[in-house]
Length: 64
Image (cartoon, rainbow, N blue to C red; front, side, top):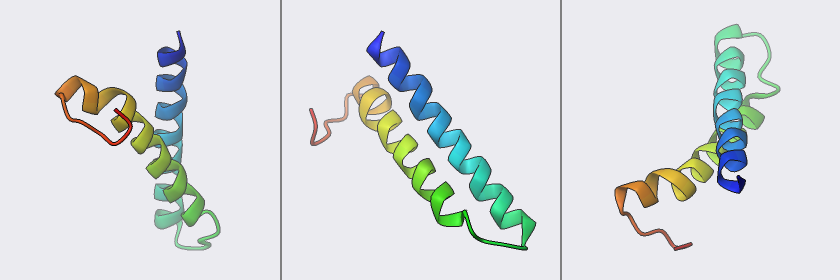
């Protein structure tokens, strides 16, 4: 159950961050949330990598 919740939250962080990043880059007006979108996308991608992708591929991380 914990892994499922982490998966959904990390996926939402990744895709939400990419959405904010893309809208800020494509709007061309204000770049207020550009850094925020990049941080959310990076954190969501990191969580997905460490908890799901790396163990499935058999790659050791510093946390394992």
